[in-house]
Length: 269
Ligand SMILES: Nc1ncnc2c1ncn2[C@@H]1O[C@H](COP(=O)(O)OP(=O)(O)OP(=O)(O)O)[C@@H](O)[C@H]1O
Ligand SMILES: [Mg+2]
Image 1: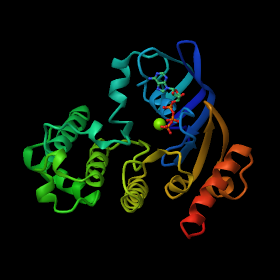
Image 2 (image 1 turned 90 degrees about the vertical axis):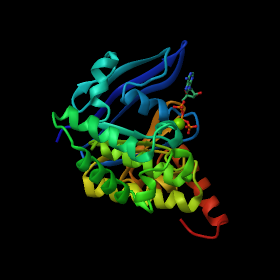
Image 3 (image 1 turned 135 degrees about the vertical axis):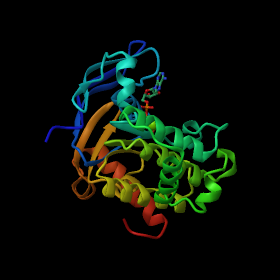
């Protein structure tokens, strides 16, 4: 089966500084992959490059095939159609994904209509409302009748993240990229959102690229992990293998740190 995302010797530079070096990996359709590594190791830049959204002034080299189509060096107008059909994203701060001047229901409806237009379909108002309600229910937002009319500032951080996930799902992407989607949330809400992502990805056969610097968090949601350090990919393997027999000293230290933290909390990894 050909890869949904195929990153081949990706390097990213900004004003002469190499921020990502020679990174290669693939994600197959339906596969759940974690990208972990310390802060500043290049995880977000790798994800942004994968959807052709690097910040101005940054230059990518190498090749990135998204559903077989080259992303590196391609003009934005050619990439825009891929976003929201092949790939959708959920970021750390859901407020950046949500429009403060639009109700939650209207924002999700807008994505549904856009997706339908791209498929050459038109949705009538009743169908849109029914689909919005279904999505609110799928992301387990309580009281969908209130949520559909709520403004982003009227709901909690965890609820906003669920709404942002509902918007991503409305695109029916084949690959979901979630960059630190739970860092801004408390531990209980974090666990709920990860459980939700896990369930949604499994039931809709989406592929997932889950980014975090927290290995135990990632381990709950993915099958395979990639470990980055200072812009390079230093280890790759099944979650179980990387957890139980990390090869690279950096993965070993990440794991030791995670265990120590976990033991301090009174539980065992
Ligand atoms: N817009 C930018 N301009 C210049 N350098 C940047 C920019 N964005 C990121 N960098 C640098 O690129 C490197 C990689 O950043 P990146 O955001 O990918 O890290 P990360 O692994 O996602 O970290 P975190 O876990 O903190 O989110 C860092 O050294 C960072 O300072
Ligand atoms: Mg980041």
